[in-house]
Each structure stands twice: as C-alpha cells, then as structure tokens.
Image (cartoon, rainbow, N blue to C red; front, top):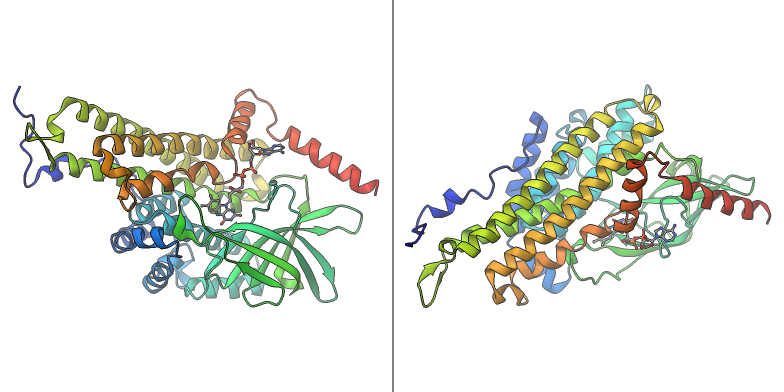
Length: 440
Ligand SMILES: Cc1cc2nc3c(=O)[nH]c(=O)nc-3n(C[C@H](O)[C@H](O)[C@H](O)COP(=O)(O)OP(=O)(O)OC[C@H]3O[C@@H](n4cnc5c(N)ncnc54)[C@H](O)[C@@H]3O)c2cc1C
C-alpha cells in the first residue's frame, strides 16, 4: 500500500490539532483568550530556559501586566476586561499553558483572586472601601497576588495551623506555608489561617499581607520535578503584625460552605493548564508526523498505521478531557451565578463533584496524551531540553492541584455518587479536635 499522505507544505494545516478546542462564551472572554494566545507564543520561547534554570517566569508577568491580561477578571470600571465567566478563564488558562504551563498556573493563582474579589464587590450592596481600593490596584495590574494555603502536614483548608491572634489594632500571624506560587514577585500574599474565637476554638480567616511587612519571609525553596518556573516557594510568618482590616474572619472551622466560590475560582481553572499541555503535545506530534521521514523506507511517520493509531488515541483522550472540562466549567458558572444566600449544601457538593470529576479525567487524559506523544516521537523526547521531556514532568503536577489529592477526590466522588455526605469524616475529625481543645 502506498503512502496515505504525501506530506510537504500545507500538510500540517490539514491535521488541525486545534479542532475541537474550547472557545470563550463571552465577548470579554474572547478578548482574554486572544491575549492568552499572543502571550503563549512569546512565552513558549523562554519556557525551556526557565525549566532548565529553575527560574521564575518574571518577564512573562511583566508582559501580562503591560497587556492588561492580569487584570482580565477585574470589572471594566476598574480597568479590567470584565471577564466574569470561569468557563472563559478556563479557556484562557489552557491557551497560556500551550506556551508555558508554569506561567499558566502562576497567572491563574492571581486571576482567580481578582475574579473572587470582583464577585464579592459586585455582590455587596455597599462594598467596603478596602475592597474598592484593592480592586483599583488589581484593575490597574499594579500588584501580583500569591495564595498561601498549603502547610506541611496537610489539611490547610479545613484546619490551618497558621494563626492570626488578635492584638490591639490588628492581628499577629505565626505559621509556615509551602507551595506559595508567585511568592517570589507577589506584592500581596493571601493567607488562609485560623483566628482564635476566644472560647477555645477557631474561626477560618483570610489575611491579606503586603510584601515587606516585618515578620513575613519568602524562603526560596522551590526546586521540583516540573512546573519549575512557577516559583512555588515557602513563606514563613513569625510575629507578623497586620492591621485589623487586613484579616477577614469567617465561620467556625468545621462549618463548610462559604469559602467554595473563592476556592473554585482559584483552583478549578488550574485543571485547564493540563488540557493546554495535552494540546501542545498533540500539536507537536501532528506537525512531526507529517514532516519527519524515517529510514530506510523514507516514509513519513504519518504514513504508518501504528503512528496513526497512537495519534487517534491522543485525539480521543483530548476530546474527552476538553468535553469534561468544558461541561464542568459551564455547570460551575451556573452554580456561581446564584447568590451565596440561595445555595444549599447539595448544590455546592454538586459543583465540587463536577470539579473533581473534571480534574481526575483531565489529569489521566493529559498524562496519557503526553506519554503517547513521546512514544510517537521516540527516544529524542527523553532527552533533557526536549519539549516533551518538560511536558512529561509538568503534566504530573496535575494530581497535586488541590483540592483534592487523587485519593481524596475519588473518595469525594464515591460518596456523592452514593448519596453520602462527603464531609462526614472531616466534620467528625474537626469535632474531635474541638472537643480536645475544649478539654484543654
Ligand atoms: C506546582 C504546584 C503549585 C502549587 N501552588 C500552590 C499555591 O499557589 N498555593 C497553595 O496553597 N498550594 C499550592 N500547591 C499545593 C497543592 O495545592 C497541594 O496542597 C499540595 O500538593 C499538598 O497536598 P498533597 O498533595 O500532599 O495532598 P494531601 O491532601 O496532603 O494528601 C496527601 C495524602 O494524605 C491523604 N490524606 C488527605 N487527608 C487526610 C486525612 N484527613 N487523614 C489521613 N490522610 C489524609 C491523601 O489521601 C493523600 O494520600 C501547589 C502544588 C504544586 C505541585
């Protein structure tokens, strides 16, 4: 049988590895996605250097500040693009990841915070002046935000050990955070912590700490398998005093619910970075297969049935990942469109389930696509400096994007699928911890 394709000029165009890609639903989202694509082309030229040198993607942030991309989720009246659809943020993050996955997750940590600040501002009948001031800074792209949630020992969202103790005029913060993406350049760090309630237990809290505040130290510890450009360093707080207005005190630890919109905005779009990685691996292979001739036959890779079969499997995995992510993003947008006061726990559980299912599916599919891309490309892809070598390592961060770890995600989905309360055990653990605290 003769060659199925002839290769040469134009063949790559017919391969259309972008067919079936997710697209923005809103006008503002479309503009954001256009910017993401422009940035991705530029960031791709530096991604390998940052990976090799383990350096933060600093100049990419300068470019995203200059273009207005970092303010995309701020309302237009504050200078942003007014993107309010998480679906569209998801699409933009996936495009950015095609060029540089580290930048995609780092930008997302900032954009998610801007999104949730904007949502809080829109929902408030009379927004507090600090919120308006913060949005002004975010809308002008003046500050970059890092989210310090994770702590050694786990459980940082449900039971943070970092503590803000009330002192005259403010709070004194002590604790240790790890994996704080953007920490290297962030002017503002958003810290998940606990605040003593004066009765032996704690309320959940969020502090906004400006870089340079005495007692806050960024420790440059980040050196990881992948996502090496994300600067996900440790941050230590030692008697770090902040003003009263800088700490938002929430519900008692153990009472779920209100934090979910913010967590969804910051964490759910991270899943999209792994779709972007799979898309980049796919486009690498579809270009290679129609240009590389193998000796002794002189055939193009694409002329071989086993290669086409691998590419078909990749296309199927990618379609599954995109469809699951796109559907979850639309469902989560619908969930977030409802005022918090109207949301029942079951609605929040459903949104979290959509998030967890999408995360599990995308992480499996994206890793499988990269693995197959390496099989088609051959041993070259195993070498340090090869695109797929980096994507192979970057894609493996997907399972660690919280919440939840893969075993806990399965536990959550298993419980909700069986109609069981997903937070039973967590509530019991926190009730025991509370009883122990009360007993002194
Ligand atoms: C590239 C990268 C960037 C990141 N950026 C950020 C960031 O900007 N901000 C941030 O806050 N975090 C960030 N993280 C951290 C991430 O979100 C996770 O929180 C982090 O990886 C720690 O959680 P874990 O994976 O150890 O999972 P854990 O949830 O700690 O799970 C580890 C194990 O413990 C088990 N387990 C879970 N709960 C319990 C329990 N109650 N009892 C017993 N066992 C349990 C799980 O099943 C699993 O086997 C980042 C991580 C990576 C890899």
